[in-house]
Length: 354
Image (cartoon, rainbow, N blue to C red; front, side):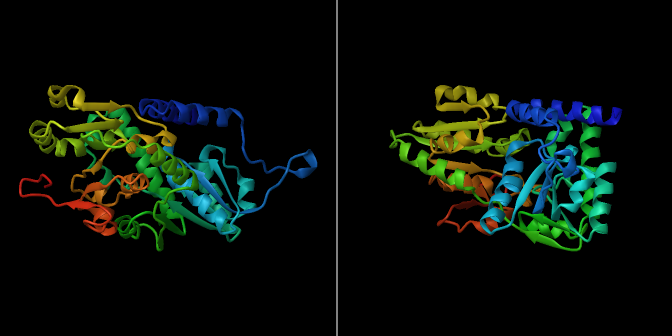
């Protein structure tokens, strides 16, 4: 019980630190409501449900959960597959009887989950691990520079979560993931890996079409947009900082839109109101925000961690017809048709893209 309280405390602190107050409240209310699914004896007035797939989420961040749980559920529903989702701390042993397949998304192993997987195996059910980042081994996460800024306690907690995700991954029948590089690395831990790339949902498409209708004509200035989903992307924007400064100094009609969880480099202060800063947005407001840009910038430092990332930023910008310039790395190199569906920036000899 004490260990569970410690996990709840650190999870809450991490969610609030990332600015996801809405998600924190949603998770807290869900926990207080006790269960969204009930599997008790029907004679006691409780209902038992039988469906195909249960998604079990261990990720407190909103955007990965939306892409890897909600969007995949939508895909399955469109194909006649019945699904449910649940927060991993609400998982109960009886649920192993009521689904044919289980998908753990970014879940750390716990004694309860270990027993659940064992029971699912006994019932001849399939268990998969879904992951969209290489956060399953410290040999990958040690390349994330942001972790150097964590306190000793926070880093220990983070690494513990990484190791516990790896332990659950190894217990599963296989993995479901987003990119070719991720699939290659995951084969070191499980015998089978399936790639199901991140896609837009019906609501994303509707919101993007609505944002396109409201999009204003260019006022003569060119807006370069950089949209950060987490604080770990600080190093990526710093990589192209000298290029951006040169563009802003030489072209007074160029503006820079910086949005999301990001530390704004102080060097940009000299450009005054040509630097537009927007806070982290709810995903439903993101199409409107991205549509304000003329070019979507996706710089990525060269690392195995970044090679495994998804092409979400390209997808979200494409939905509102904003062209993307991305580092020629990982899925962007693989998915983008250079000059047709986007632009790939090759690294120069100095390490900067051109």
